[in-house]
Length: 449
Image 1 (cartoon, helix red, strand yellow):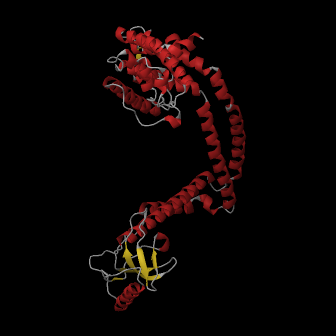
Image 2: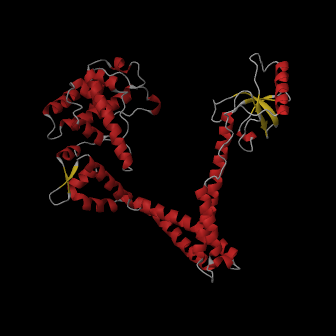
């Protein structure tokens, strides 16, 4: 539609037509209520601004400092929490079988022996044996900070956690080691880097607090009253700005989409700069004007890349089904083997081009072209080969009526391609021949009806 509008009216006039279209009118009509809300909120904002006026200075600036300080403190608090959690996980990951640790919390706080490590989950949960012979696992929720070994003992090779005597003997060894105050094994680092966390953010917080105390409004006796009005103003300001963005997003949406389409067409060479600097339609663009369908740009690209050049009429019909057919979501499956090597190559071209086109459309915030569907390739190939309908539909979930409907759409596409001026005569001839192969039997009969 965009390229035909450009051909008939030029870009400027086409944009004017779209801006005054009924579709744009429907989009703009919803803006009326939003605009009324914005006006009402702007009046409230003016009242809030008046109520927070301070005779000592600019309270808006003072409120901004308070918000910055609050945001910085929240960010630092969250960052410290994440850092401490990471340090706790790291300390658990460092524990080795035989380490004796002091578990500060959880179901069984106190000394325990590490029996094994466990890194299979998102966080380590080593297995431990408490000194009262209880088996359990510990995680970050049991810690108040990084955990380090108090001492270390040897776990006998014959140790069996399921045997009570083995547990008692190991617990006894741990008590003896704690009484003797044996140090951890040499070379085992217990420094987890709990120095100053996020020093730059803490410095910024200090600077903001100093600026806040130095501000004239800090000494106002009505400071907290002004601050409450300021918070109301700020909250309403954000809500109002969000409404304004909604209005901007809905205004001239049709024309904006048209502009994005023009950018895509220019990127693909369907539009080019003319002698007068205006956009002109290239020969490929003139061919695109004659193609109508959900995948029109993809079809045009397939022609440009010669996807039909090495096929026979039967294969052309099968490839056309790829550019037309839309499978039900539950019917989509793995890619089937193609009937021939040449058709396999052509399908590869179409799929690669669709993937590239989808990236371009997504970058330009346009609706995405549907993925090529291969579920009709074999039925269409068999039908073009002259097989009976029952044989064609065997092994598929297609109903006869659905198959006839899709064949008619393939015929419509092939008819469009056959009549495109300037197309390779051989390709045009193959499209016409493919139509004659598939317009037969129930398809031809239903067309007459």
